[in-house]
Image (cartoon, rainbow, N blue to C red; front, side, top):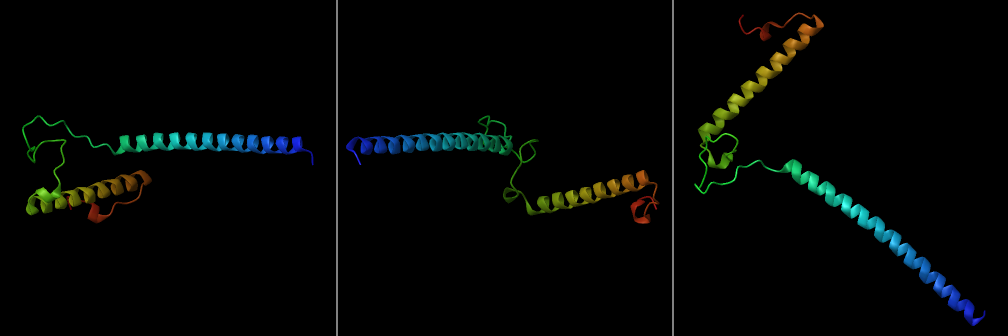
Length: 116
C-alpha cells in the first residue's frame, strides 16, 4: 500500500469518528435539555403554595391555605379531622351512588335513604 493511502485512510477514519461524536453529542444535548424541561415542569406541578412569611414567626394553625403538619397538631384534632374526612368521603360516595342509580332508573337502596 502506498504511503498516501495510509494518510487518506487515517483522515477518513478521524473524520467519521468526529462526525459520529458530533451526532452523539447533539443527541445527548437535546435529550438533556428535554429532561431539564420535564424536570422544571415537574417542579412546577409539585410547587407548594405557601404565602411568604410576614416576619411574624410561626403561622397559627387556623390560617386558611397553609397546611399545618400533623406532627405539630394535637392528636385529638387530627383524629377529629380524619373522622370528618372519612364521613365526608362516605357521603360523597353515597351521593354519587344515588345519582348514578337515579340516572339509570334503578330503585334506590334503603341504606342510601338517610331520612328513613
